[in-house]
Image 1 (cartoon, rainbow, N blue to C red):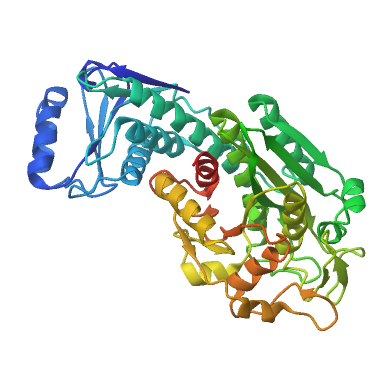
Image 2 (cartoon, one colour; image 1 turned 90 degrees about the horizontal axis):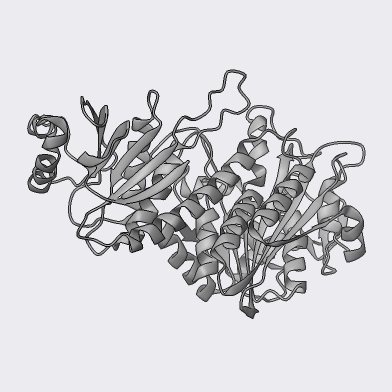
Length: 491
């Protein structure tokens, strides 16, 4: 798919579909509709006069044309003058999904800007929304058809220079492609996305972006004393992998570590999950997928700071060799852990991965994981992800990055009182603090292995996978946190 930025007006562009985001509010909407009338012989004005289209956010109407395009999709940006990049992103995604109903090879959209948003910001948001709205995962279907969309054309008013829009569009392509990589990894089933497959994906990303890649095998982990990661893996015949991707920036002494949970299938182990819905546990590597996607973007964006991308990859299966409730294991940093529930495994593999990030000299550590069902209970489905952290400054940076990407994060309390809940009577720690306060105890458990480094945990359990389509999100893996983590590296 090609993304083209043209200095032109929409009516001059030859394509299959025009997608036009429009602000709500009668006066402004009518002005925008009048500008479109030469394209659609007055149909846009009639549509709005009839009340069939009001411009509310993500509302769509489709007009069929007999001209340089055969279809015009109107999509709402919402009322008022509080236009945001996220509204632009959503409208572009919604419009693209409507445009692609039928055989479509080219789509043109006019650049939307104003209300304090510059051309680069709006172009990036439009390209991200359009590309992610066009995404679909059907490669495993025997009758899957290749997406026919070959180009997206972004038209820029002729009185504006195209340089800013081109810069934004280029960044939008990088961010969207990185997010789609993560979506692909999450959507693949467990037999096609094992720890070895994730390692192969990391090697491919490194080869394409110039990152360095190291894969630690189980023998390497044993030498490093990673008893937590190896403990989770010991019930599976698939070997664990620890992926380490490196971007070396000009600021070599400013190292950010992004750490992901790559649990490629989670049965719960001996503490077996219920059968209903277990097939979705292929997505328990969404945090690892987010880190791999973010590292692909970072490899292209080349920020000044150095970045480590570390993904702990394993399966969690029941067998004669699997961890048992009551077992005690020793993590890389020497802390002993009593296993109360083998289904609280993500924090175990992240314990060793975070400890390893600290040992490599990371000045800041951010981990991402589908860690707790409690997070969805607390924050609802597919709206907010949670943050648990030991550094308010790092949380502020994450929220600043998220404000640019449209992803939403809510900081949960991190008081030391919660740590009392996962103290063990036979070991240093136990791997669960019980049902109450699960988001905090699960996150703070991981923080015990950060070595005092500024650290933040992103619990993306409610946001990593969805069964509903909306704006630029289709069913399946969402790729959440990819763009925020990449943006964080560039602050």
